[in-house]
Each structure stands twice: as C-alpha cells, then as structure tokens.
Amino acid sequence: MTPQSDEDEVWRQIVASFNDTAERDAADQPWPDSENLPPEPLRRVVRQSGEDDRPPAKEDFTGDDTGDEAGPEGPDDEGHYVPPPPPPLPKTDTATKIAWLGLFGGPAYLLLSAALNWNLQGWMLFGAVAAFIGGFVALVVRMGDGPPNDSGWDDGAVI
Image (cartoon, rainbow, N blue to C red):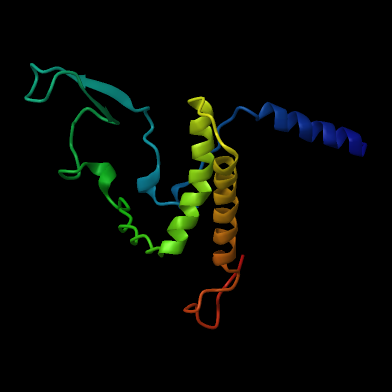
C-alpha cells in the first residue's frame, strides 16, 4: 500500500464521520453539570390575564412549564455583578474652566454668527480664533506628561 492510499483512506473516514455527534462522558467536561444546556430548546410561554393575577400577555422564557423560580428575583439574578458607584469627578480650577470655555466657545461663536448671518468685524473674528487657540494651548501645557505624585515606586505603564 502506498502512503497516498493510506491518506485517502483516512480522509474518507474523516468525511464519513463528519456529521456524527461526539459522545462525551460527564467526567470529561471542563465545566460543572449545572452549566449544561437543557436537551430541549427553550419554549416561549404566554400567560393570559384570565389564568392568574398577572398583567395580560406576560411572556416568560423558561426551559420547563412548571414555573418554579429560585427566589423572588428569579434564577438569573444569582451572582449578578453590581458595580460600585463611580468616584466623583475631580474639581477643576478657574484657569482650566476658562481654557475649556475658549476651546469650545470660540468655534461655537463663529458657527452661530455664520448660521445667523451676523456681520463680524475683524476684532471679533480674531478674538474667537485666539480664544480657540489659547484654550487649546493652555490645556496642553497644563496636561503634564509625568506620572502622578501618589503612585508609589511602581507606576506601571505611563502613556
């Protein structure tokens, strides 16, 4: 037998068993049995208002028709992660507020004057452009490029 015919035979076996399902033992699973999917697909159960005191056409998506739940929240709320509230925003000083106002206020004034067909004098146009450039430069200069002072000896990656 040639090596080519052996490869052809192996290929035929692979193709013949393509649609076969693999039989797995429960001990071979890398996850607990409670995480396995039910053998039957989930069915949509629609309860009408005449059956119980629920509002009309309340839809439940369950794997069975028993209606048993793990608790008042239901089976899906077990282990639900609730993130902590975010920390408060840092306080900004007056110079930073003025820089942000110039960065957005200058172009906003130019757009508003163009939309309303205002006649701009030269010093108004210069002031709006200077406010934009000044605000941008002030924010970049105040940004800083060093690590924070309270980071300790290991500041990790500094971008």
